[in-house]
Length: 450
Ligand code: NDP
Image 1: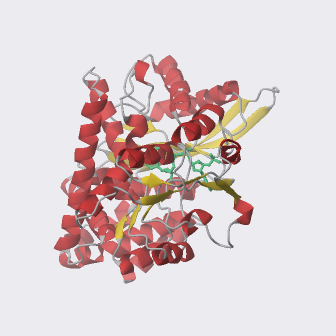
Image 2: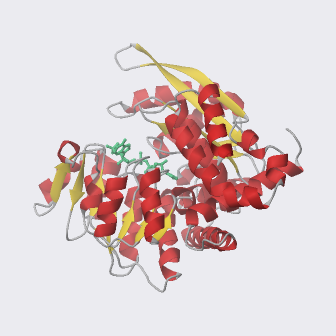
Image 3: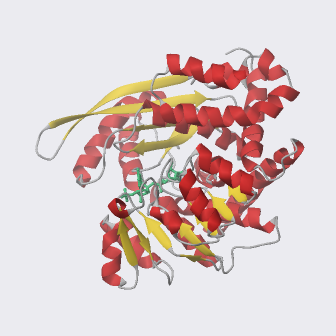
């Protein structure tokens, strides 16, 4: 596949040392091969070279003052990747690991994810290497205001609409929205993930986790199976993990694990959701505290994980929901999951499985829902928030949830029908990448060389 190697070689020269970005590009381009062979128009219009290059990248200084009066500086990013089918849309991540390679991989994935939803949204992503952990509310507010002092000139309800991601929830969106409003005087739907009393959508908080479970349900139903009675493992303890666990219980499954950056919990009787919410959403505490309330549960710190592995995936299960971060599930983890009888993986996180792990899942022929399909419920519901803001309406939880279920079913159908069209009916990586790409690429051709 010379075009894959050629493209990666060019990117390594033009965008050095962006490893996660190369990984995401390679995965997408590899699975586009049957489409590119079948239809020469994409090569003729040089779509590959154009689509891997962001339309615009904004990198800026974010100075702020901590509680001790010291001046701190972080780096801010917004990458407006592709607007062929709609305004740029994608979250903001605040985490010390953030650098241009992370934001670019996320932005690139977002193009195809947003296209797959069937909605009119382009791809973008942003964030900062700011670490919200251990910061006071006032420090978070000052950082968010400084971040928005630059970002506001690049975003708008019909141009670029950021949302949350790791480290960015309702509180951070609130501080950024307040500053945007102060700077522009506009009260408009320029950010999603807003709180309910000032423009947010019901079910947006739950949407990514719920959506990943609905996606698993669709995959299993297509094989005459269901989630009911299944033991499930979940990684993460943030927004996506919590609402994945909630929906799993609602559908009669038993989630037995969760994890954070310091360790994991295995609770054989099922994760205590109320306690998890109290620890993570209210106290911002370590999961280690979970076992103070449940003596039968087991806490394993990251330092005790088997070498090169994530211990969450050692727990026997029938279904797994990676919901923390990228590359958290390795080839060795995939082997353990498969040997233990896992038949379904639905990715709430972005690119959580390494390419070698994905290869194992595809080879085994189990239900495998890649992140760009399985976690698209979050961005889809963000678009529903934009629609409510634009029409000055607020829909009920049930209305939004019903639309989310319809959207997840649509994504599954689009990915699986496209996979079947190219002769690999169970390969949803291929189906999701081709279906997502084709819509954007055709729009780019229609709109000329811009
Ligand atoms: P949160 O910040 O709410 O939670 C992230 C969780 O993952 C936390 O438990 C955190 O641990 C853990 N975590 C983060 N980084 C690491 C790491 N390097 N190693 C181990 N654990 C880690 O984020 P979200 O739940 O919103 O996002 C989780 C994933 O889902 C990300 O990949 C994100 O891109 C993806 N996603 C999120 C969407 C959304 O709507 N929020 C939409 C689509 C995808 P700790 O508590 O210790 O920090």
